[in-house]
Image (cartoon, rainbow over all chains, first blue to last red):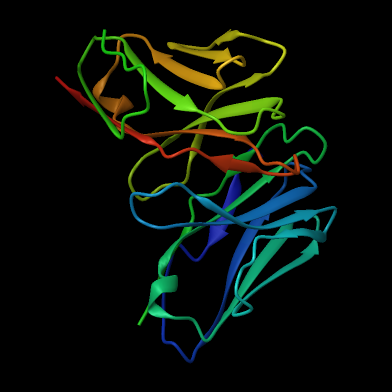
Length: 113
Length: 112
């Protein structure tokens, strides 16, 4: 299995809703990442998990809450988002030491209304 | 073939031409680089990678060149096809060496 699977593919949520994005990989990668991508822009790093522990938080607002319950799963919990948070959210995974095999999922297209 | 010396946001080529996409990276300590292709509505797709102990690496129809002196990467696509139309990003290691960060991207348009 050489894929990173993200669900859902599309999500529309209100500003008072709570929702979660899910990411799964079975490549044995122990580093997992969340990126945010706005239209016509490059992906921007949000969070890095190494060995299931949060190692980098790129000054992301607390309305985004990541969670890594095990070595194959990565979640992003969303609460009280703003319309400007609408974007494509990408998950990736790789080997920890050399970042080899850095693979992205297809993303979740999030719209906040 | 079409080539650009500096990063340009768009590149338009004819089918069959060779394309060259350029990228300037910022982290001189990065020892690993990847080129990704991103089609509309999809996640970035790995094309080719290169480590800093190499100057050149070839794949199927693609070649990556690394010039560490001027911190420059290029992606060469031979015999460009309409299916190559996409946005291409270079990625380098961040300062902590724990994740990849992306360059601005170049939109390649191939006309037949």
